[in-house]
Each structure stands twice: as structure tokens, then as C-alpha cells.
Length: 437
Image 1 (cartoon, helix red, strand yellow):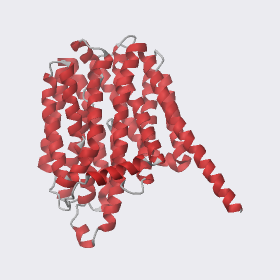
Image 2: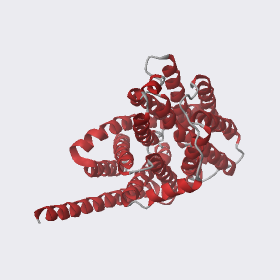
Image 3: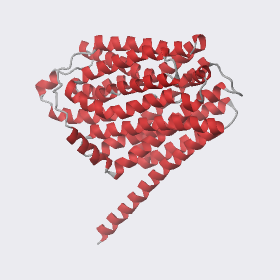
Image 4: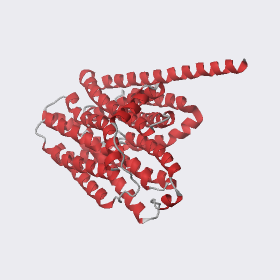
């Protein structure tokens, strides 16, 4: 989102970790000896390849987000219309991530990722030449759907090819590629666009993606532990249905969607607010605002400690409160206050997302990979909904309208968490009463 881009990376990390634990239990000593380990040439090649894949994926996914004011002016469209260039990509990814995760079981992780990056990079070279907003949105939809093949396959590839004790480090490098790609893509596009226009900005991100795709294909080691499996639509549908019928999982999916609605709305519209009076910041500086994403890396890492001290629901309440405080701060006309508000929104979002996404793997008793894929679907749908509705609200009521949308989403997340808290308290009372009898 991902975020962002960075946002998605946390989900992937949890899914990969759960997958690795099940695979590790089935390993034989001889088989484990042939897996990749730190210090080995194959491990270094794999790490560099997956890092490049992460950079390409999230640089492309949000490449238009920092350019929306320029796209609006050049194409003569409204902010809510321009926002579809972001929402279409994240929506395409949301809809394709489950099917592509299933196809990777049949055709292989390496092949799926290679095809995904090649298609997405090729489309990226066409995007700058889109003659109209309609063509731009259509190309971005195809691009997002193609990119779904990377998160759908990367963690499974790592779990199969890396020795279990080294898996966390390998995942960390891929997550770093996600974060850096999401940030660098926006900043690169912003500064290039300031000098040569938004089409040149998108072209620069496209070239970056092509380079990353070539590096990935040249460096990624052949899969040695992948076993093709038949894709059963009926079995997949049954597993997904089981997850969607689980009240706890539905609540977690809802929380992820609502947090991402806020994040998508804020970062889709913030460029318009900062480019307008009283700030009137240039395009390159607006793109550099996404350096704030680095805060998300810190808050995601701190989420585990927060859960240890406050519990999962306590950590979610804190995340909601932090995000809400940030939204209110951005209502001021002080640039310093607005930037501080963005820091709080980013920190709160990533903490809430980390808690919710990690809870999915914990709550799912079977089919954890599919449970995490459904979370990714809800997460990226939240990005699409937030980006579009946030821009509609901005067009109708200015930045205040976008903030109101964000506050409503946080009320929803707090309500879900409060419901879960009351339910847990009621269950504890029942247990306590039973123990007294």
C-alpha cells in the first residue's frame, strides 16, 4: 500500500513466516542442507533479486500518487477523477492477489514473479504515452493486476528455498525493498516531473522498473524445492469461505481496510493540499513528503512491543488514537503542524496495520496463506476506496472533507475493537463463573 507501499509488506511478512513454520516442520535434515543460507553466493543473489522485485513492485504501484496535481492540471480533470490512477492499480492488485497466489502453486513462484514484473514493467513504458485519463486508468489497472504476482509468490519462494533459521533475514530484505520502492518511486517521479512534466516522471519510474525486472531475472536462483500442485478452484473456494465466515477474521479484515482507507485518502490528496495556498510547495518538494514513510518502518517494528505491553486490542486503540490526533493536526494552516500530523497518521497506520495483519495468521487455524491473501485483498481495497472517496471529499469540502472521511474510518476501527473487547470481557466472565461452580 502498501507501505507504502510499505503497508503491504507487513502482511506479506506475516504470511511468509507462517508458511515457513509449516514447511520447516516437514524438512528432512538432508533437504535443509541444500537450502540457501547467509554467506552463500546463492543467498546473496536471491536477496538482491527479491530486493529488486520489491523496489519495482511498490515504485510502480503508487507511481502516480505524488503526481496527481500535475495530472489534474495537464489533463483538465478533477482530483477525484485523477485519483483513479492510484485506485485502479491498488484495486487491480486486490482482485488479482488470490488468483495469482493459486497459479503460483501450479506454475512456480519464480515463473510467476518473472511474468508479473515483465508485464508490469512493459505497461510502465506505455503509461507515459496514455492519450487520456481513461487510457491511463486502464493501463494502471492492468499494471496493478500484474504486480499482484509478486506478493503472491515472493514469501512462498523464500519459505521453500531458504533455510528456516535464515528466513527472517531474507524476508526483511524483501520488506526493505517494498518500503524503499514505495518511497523512491514517489520521490523520483516528483522531482523528474518538476523539471520535465508528469509523463517524464512516470517514464523515469518505468525505466527503474525495467532495470529492476532485468536484475531480478538475472539474479534470482532457480527454484530447487518447489513441487507443482494442482489448482483446485473448489478447494480454494471452500478455504476462502471458511475464513470469511469466521467473525474474528472478518473483524481483522475490516480493521485493515479502515486503516488503509485513511492512509489512502490522506496520501492521495495531500499533494493537492501542499501544492495549494497557503503552502504552495513545488512538485519535487511535495514528492519528498513521502520520506515520512520511514516513520512507518519504526512504528511497524515497535508494534510487537506495544502488543506485549498493551495487548492486541490496547495496541489497536493506541493506533486509532495516534491516527486521529494526526488527522486533527493537519487541519491547521501551519506547515510544521501538518507535517507532524502526517508523522502521527503514518505511525498510527503502520502500527494498526502490523497488529491486524499479524493477528490474521494467529487467528487462522488452517489455510493461513489464503487468510493473509484475503487480508491483502481487504487492505488494497481500502487503499482504492480511500483514495477515491478522499479525493471526492476534497473536491466537495476541501481538506476538511478528507479529514472527516478519515475520522469516520477511525470511528469504525475503534467500534470494531470495542466490540471485540466487550465480547472478550463477556467470555472471561463466563469462564470465571464456570470455574466457581
